[in-house]
Length: 245
Image 1 (cartoon, rainbow, N blue to C red):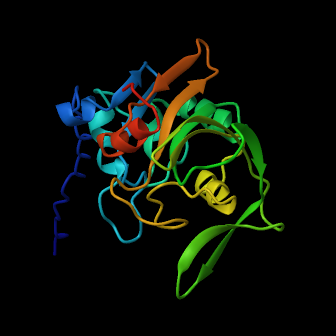
Image 2: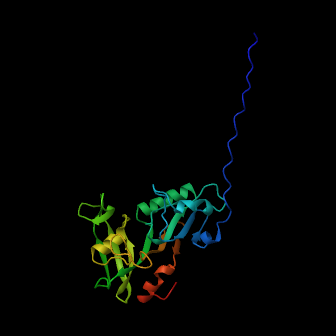
Image 3: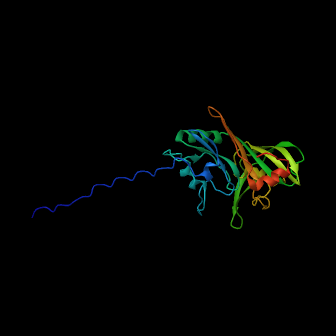
């Protein structure tokens, strides 16, 4: 008998990658503080996680394809920012830029400035330095949290008072290390919890009053961006003497 002929289907062609939008929607575009060919600085809202967690839910990762501005590669965060913290978040738009930015943050060469409103009158002095090592602990009852402990990783924060009023204190914080929850734990450990901190203080209207106010990047040329005070925090900052945006 003659051999049976079989017909093979030609291999399927791979689908082309999805076309990314040339411009983000207005509600996202309004949060772009700085944009170059290689770097984006975004005003991240409080309550939005940078990365999707195991339980799912909204995160900045949902926005990334809309921030590509037509590039094949979507931008990626170059550092961490707590879910509850608002303000400046740096993203790399290319692989080399992301590597360079990551090195800046890892080496402590990116200059980060935070603003916080403290629950209470704050420190007696007007400026100072906090050196408290931090470590992560967890329990079935309370979950994970960060605590000051001699066996922890070194952590340093510079601070100065910018204003006081209404039983509150407005503080500028400049971390010299990048530990998880560093500013929140440092303030609380010295008796000045940040207003609205549910982990290390007490919840309050407006949520956690911690803002990643400004970022300076020693690139060529240098880049800098500043985030506005969110509407939910303005009353507390204004009560301490803040009158800007």
